[in-house]
Each structure stands twice: as C-alpha cells, then as structure tokens.
Image (cartoon, rainbow, N blue to C red; front, side, top):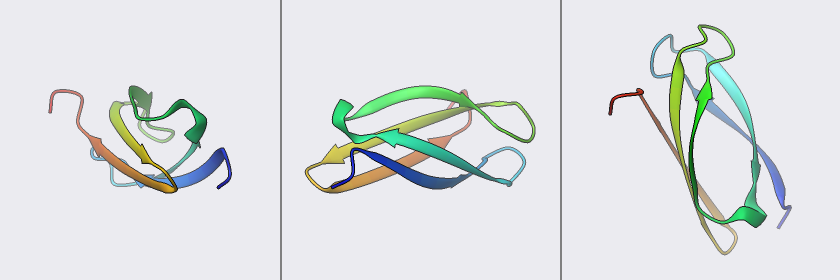
Length: 62
C-alpha cells in the first residue's frame, strides 16, 4: 500500500471535484479542508483499515 494516496472528492457545497492527498500512515483522521473552488470548509473523515481507505465528506455543520 502506498502511504500517500490521491483521492477525488466532491465538494458538498458547490459540487466541484477536489483532489486530496491522504497520508495513510497516520491512520484514521478527521480534519477540515477548504474547497479548492468555492473556499468553503469541508469536513473530511478518513478511515484507514489495513489496505482499505474510506473517505466521507460533509458540510461544516453536519
């Protein structure tokens, strides 16, 4: 498994695609990333389980 992986997400506000680089060596994570298009804050939830990486994004207040 690559420790750095690129994943595409869709902004929950404007619907545009954003690319995230995920550091899988850090395990499961939760952080806020600004949309590259509309600059609104996106909650990013990353679950790393062995070789599986699951991403979930939501509005700031969800």
